[in-house]
Length: 316
Image (cartoon, rainbow, N blue to C red; front, side):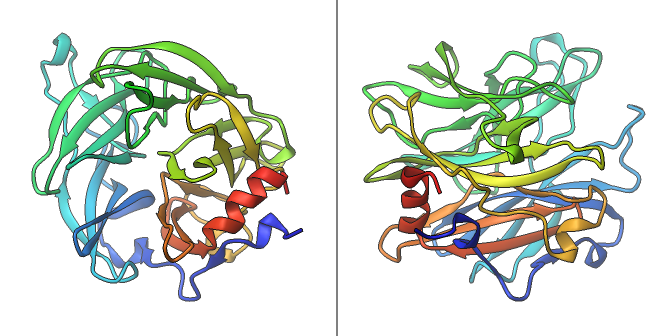
């Protein structure tokens, strides 16, 4: 039986993006990466030193980084995600971070948890792009508080599904699922998984866009442990039934990535590894996880897709 904590192997030259290389940026973290043609597209959460905008707190934005080889990325200096200021009469959305990207047919849908000044937040804002040059906001598709909502990449029995993560801040957070016929109106809410099934996710648990495999929907999750010394963020994995995706048919008992390297232990947010998705290649039997470390760095780890699936089934 293979140790699930050793399935993912860190890229030897991590980190692949370092905040010190981008003057004016205070934080750089939590990427979401997809393949687009012959490019790797990464949505990066960034916070500038001067980005307060009168809210009394840092205001995050999303910028695109592009790569031909999946390792060497060029980060844009332009913000990509936005929301109409007059949507439902709300004053302004801000803090566009922690995006989840899902490709459905020829469109890339992005769910961004955004803050609303003066109201309970965050909420999940759905937007879309076909070329990563233009972006179109669509609608708010979650009630507050909800951070980390993630779409499935295809319909299941005629309906779209998304994983939800109700809660925010210091709330105890778990994973739910909901269904829709049009990606905007959602219902059929069902609980999927509680935090606390193992020590590394006792405080929080949250999803990323599921990956279809022959044995089930594989989902990379994060978990939070809050001992007396402060919070620690880990990564794990779960497997959901292909036809009834609210059913958990496997999960790793152990974490699959923990903050053990120096760049994962110290920074703007100590002891943090956090992913917003993964890229899987069934032919290569490979899964690539891009993750933020300590809100300072973007890193990468790879492993065998089949081993991670088996680890969920065998509950390693």
